[in-house]
Image (cartoon, rainbow, N blue to C red; front, side, top):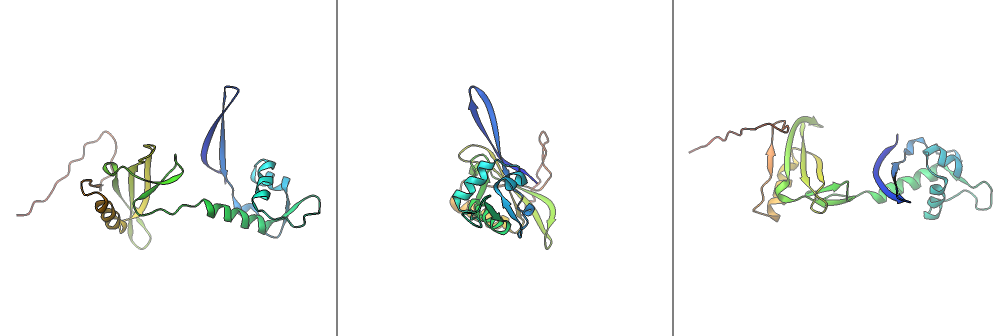
Length: 187
């Protein structure tokens, strides 16, 4: 399982080169096995130099004097899980993760939209999609949540800015369609 998380573009002698970072499948590692640098590189389909960089970043080896250099599978798994934990970002209620900026970002308040999907997620709660546009790079943002979080999300947004409103769309909206909204008026 290899997931591509970001494409980086480099220019080498006027030739465009795209390098893709891969997400490493930790479940391929056998904890009680010993791996050499070459075996790790082949296991994850990465360059040998990447494994050597991991060693400099703190990946411990079994014996510093023995050749070839061996790494215990459980230590490799621990190191990669720790690296993954370091990269995790916790989001506040009003934040999204921008895939272009690779950072938690807030949305432009006028552009926030909440979509009720109608799908059930755990304990009878309904799924919602909160969509917006990144303040920094104008990339589209999406965050999954449950129906219970709408009130909390609305309260935070309205406290920060009273003049902005959140659009709630409970229909399956598609581009190029007109949606009529009926409002019940009470005297």
